[in-house]
Image (cartoon, rainbow, N blue to C red):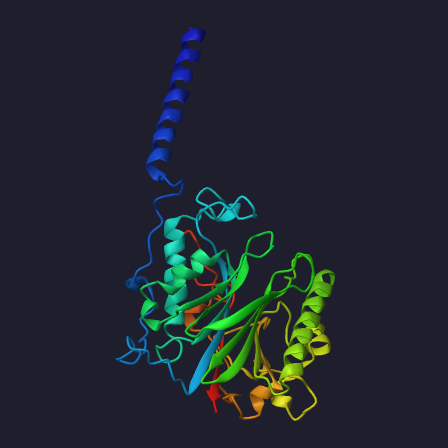
Length: 361
């Protein structure tokens, strides 16, 4: 009798395991991700009117601009779905922790481009400095996305860096540039230095992504100081050729405007204290006003300008135009940036984009 009971119980266990296995197969896609994911559509997004770009945007209306809009944005982990054997990107693959599949990538691209197309009265920024992109492929996917394809982002500047995670900086632009890459120290993420010629006026843009605070602010501070010293050295070299050069430093500095790397080493003073004519650099970020629903505790994403930007020759900053883009639907319940979720396809980035406008004199 006992043997029969054991056999019966064993059969029940086998049956349960078989049913669980069948359920698992039915719930799992061929890419190794649960099918409950869905692609974000217009109906999922907030009902906010997006200003339409000029009717003749198909023609090159950006050819002779009177002003340009520059944006910096750490778009947080824009990865493709393929495993790169040379980087630590396993998390962002279909079988990785983030379950990063084609649906995840589509949703991420949709959400990011939905914000880009809202900027500048529906015409989008003219030049975008990006942080945390895996490769050129994903930047091309951004530029060709239906949300912004008509906005004429013809030029992409990117190279694969030595970052262990495989996240890089890049520029997406309507205008061509000559570019080079600098490193503050061996193993550092690249600083992308772009020189644009717009309306016969040169404009330098330095895209930064400094060392994160992972491991502690104090323990990692030295790396950000090294990055600051590399930045100021690059600025001085440009100014040695052109003392009035128009230079922008944008990106994710992983330090606040008042922190030592920015104030004491980069020597960037707040824009609202620009009476200090001896300073090489001025930080637009402290002048920003935030929406009532925003509760930022750090301002790592900044736009810093050279003295030349304030001289009303070439490119000139339009006072009050610096903005932290923080629509209410981009915020979580605590007023912080709503990070993208690969599971439900909602969210954008753990950083808000920053934008400023410059008149061409």
